Structures are given as C-alpha cells and as structure tokens.
Image (cartoon, rainbow, N blue to C red):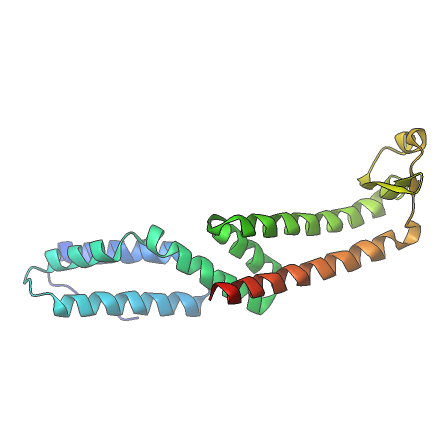
Length: 197
C-alpha cells in the first residue's frame, strides 16, 4: 500500500496516527487480509480527499477520519468476521480460539461455542490425568447409573461404591470424543457463518 503524502505536516501526522490505530486493530488477521483492509481504507481516504472541495488538507483529513470512525470500534466486527473465516478454512485450534475471543461480543452462540471448547480441553486434560493417575480418573458409575466423568481420590471411590466402567478403553474413548467434538464445533462455526451471510 502506498501511503498518501500531504504537504501539511499536521495532516500527515493525523493520517499516520490513524493508520497506526488501524494496523493495531487489524493485527490479529493474516498479512493478506491486513493488506486488503489497509488498501480499502487508504483508497477511501484518497477518494474523500479528491471529492472534498475544502482546500485545507488538515480539515479534509479530519472530516474523512471522523466519517470513517474510530478503527477500534468500526473494524472490530470486520476483524472478527475475517478471523472466523480463517479459522473455518484452516481448522487451526489457535485460529478458532482467537476467532471465538474476537466474536465473543457477537452473542450467546459464541459463549456456547466457548463452553464446547472448554469441554474439548476437558477431554484432553482427562487423557493426561488418566496417564498420571490411572486408578483415580475415569468414567464412574454407581448402581448402574452415571455418577462422575473425571478424577476422584481413590479412597473416596471405594467409600462411595463407584466403579470405573471404561478401564483401558478410557483414553481411546476420550481421544475419539475430543476429535469428534473438535470437528463438530468447527463445522458448526462454518454453518453459523453461512447462516449469518
């Protein structure tokens, strides 16, 4: 992107400061998306400068920036949407988490997605815990009814009469559950994006 050059130092400073704020706001995006947004905003400013009949550069750029609005507010939904697109394309867990965090303000559906991801990481935690403490972690039943999926002191397990039902199948079951849940959540995010558009 070629920056616009002003003859007035104050106008140049205002333009440069605005673009620093824009760059900071769009920093979570990949380089291609950042470049695309920067070019769009720069083009909008350039066209605004050409269409404005005022001869004072500082007044022109001030009016245009006021019309564009604060980048931290105006660009936040766009950044969140682009990050969501990136997350659903890549299936990268970090991109998905960043997209969820950016989109948290978009409504309760993202809170539900965040809880689903919490459950996903719970499955992964249980796999590690089972490896470290095989006798105290598992899927526990009492009198044929579900009682606990997690960890408990081995002494209290006996006192409560809890029986671990998966045994050696606990880790494969949790691993399969985590994989299925991860892909389900990511596909639900794609579906939500299509419904919104």
